[in-house]
Length: 305
Image (tube, helix red, strand yellow):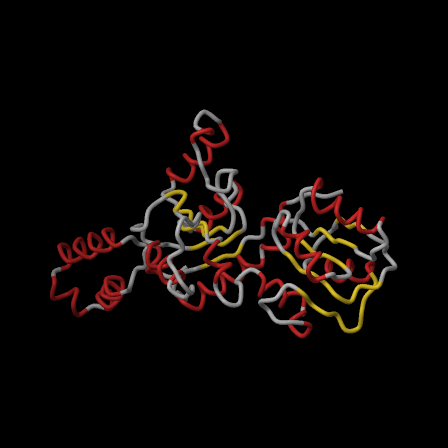
């Protein structure tokens, strides 16, 4: 973190005024300390709102009506001391942000356990109160960047996932179907996904010896749109984030019983989309290199046996 992130602007002025009072303005102007103080005053400070606006302006057709991409805590005028990007702004992530001196969290998913971040039903809940108070006490802004990052071209969540897998050679970054060359067995495909996405385990439905050439890649949670896409694209395998077990999972099982060679690999919602938060961190480092930005993987805290 650089010097201009460690001193809020009012503190800088007070600091300089105090020096001037003690040392005298002539001495201050001629001393090396003056150039340091002048740099502090002239350094551009960035607000939460400026970062939000800078990202949104690259989205075709922005602003999006009725978006969930709103501030969940804090306000637009907060001067940013550091940024953390993540899938979910969990209490653990908030505590890490505090340790890093970061007061702006850019998350892809909700803060308060529902899509719209409605809080009326949580007002007496101790977990909600602890989290909300932790954010308020430390003056941390949380912005959900979901609709906007999915709306840039190519999709800011799909693109880094495809690149992480090395599948850009098998299809366009903005499409859902990838043709693997050569084809892989379901077992080999699972092994490749686990290795490249750094996953200890996945769930699957299908025959491990089945040949998989045409892959339908649907990160996140698409609900019944997964079934519609399966019928339209007729892939060998669906690779997705998560499913409702009474929907897509049962459809896959019935498809297999009807004679189709159709399999499914479930990565987990976080595992399939968290690379979009890496994308967001890379964007921050390019657009605002003066701000320390840290990508925190939520999947690293998941325990599996």
